[in-house]
Length: 232
Image (cartoon, rainbow, N blue to C red; front, side, top):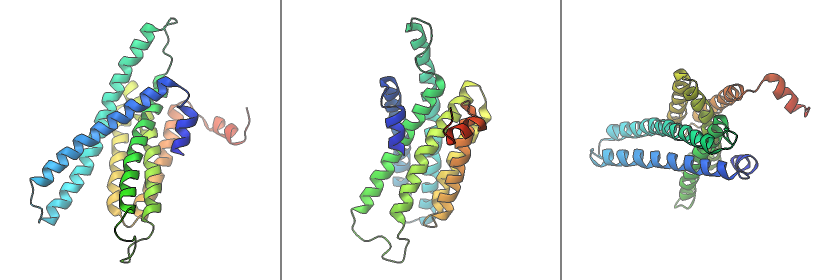
């Protein structure tokens, strides 16, 4: 599905490809910074203290989420400046791409890079040694990880639309809602290997975020009905 989003909505437009790559870069920088801080914290702590190490893991996840959203805000500010430059250079005084389209493409960029790193970690585990579920653990690790990666890609896409809309119209509660949803989804991963505890809430939040983003983008129930019925 994520590859389909790129092929059908982004790949044919060079400007959108640039925005997507830049968005992926911003997400990557946020991950590198949060990983560095977590690594330093772990090295400076007592490795024998399991309670402390678990607390540092939770701190690392939550800090990474906040840093990702901070970089999403920085990317919004950068794109806002880019729009002003595009308007100044255009002959008709209009930008070739709207802020809503930028929000979507930036969200896909964040999501694809997030999914790429999740896939790399998954493939690293698949190389072994060992067999999944050999000690009575769930044998659905790879399947559930794939579904979790997919939902995170879509969530980042919808979060990008919601976040940019909140910044554009100064609706800070929309930005706060994105941060809270992101923290909730990331925090639910601590329910693993009880995968129902993380997958179900994540997909419910994805459905809610999708509906919200659809409405903010100008969609309506009538338009959705026409699309489903293949009517013009």
